[in-house]
Image 1: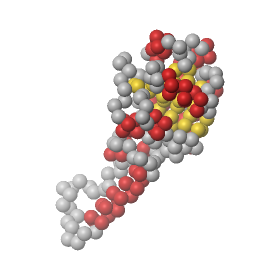
Image 2: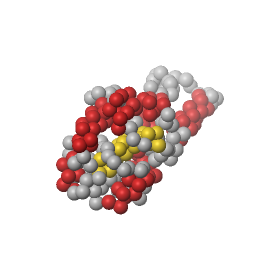
Image 3: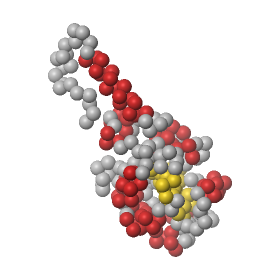
Image 4: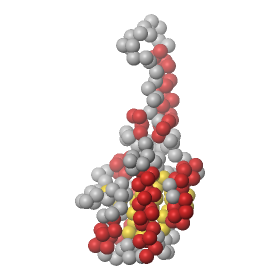
Length: 216
């Protein structure tokens, strides 16, 4: 799914709209996450009504004030505004964790509109980590169900739940496939097992730390 943006520029929704530094950073943010592509126009009445609902929806799933662990969710905003001033006025009140397709990159914005058949806004496309479409427009679903939508999307996706990963895998360099962390955990467990089976090993030479593989 991150491939959709490789070779393109994405911005952070901060005061300076900083660019993501590298393709590696794009992978780190988007890999193993459900992606929301949000198409809207600030002057559209339906967009104005939906925006605060989407903001609350996203915040309650990703802000650790509400949840112990942020959900594996990312959002990229694609504006249909005609002026940069309209665009900037809209996004300044939106969550800082949103990513933005630059207003200046009209060609890419139009490509995305065509690719996802956007004819009228608001449109909220939901994508699996693989890039497959879960919903071509989940606006009504978000309005009706709120945050429980994410659990529904998660069940039909190929997401590896971070709760089952070693901490070192959660925020490290992203893997090129969702199965890589599983293979790496398996390798680590097998390596520890072989180490424990070496002849002459003193079981107490670990300093009394209690052993274990460090999964929790």
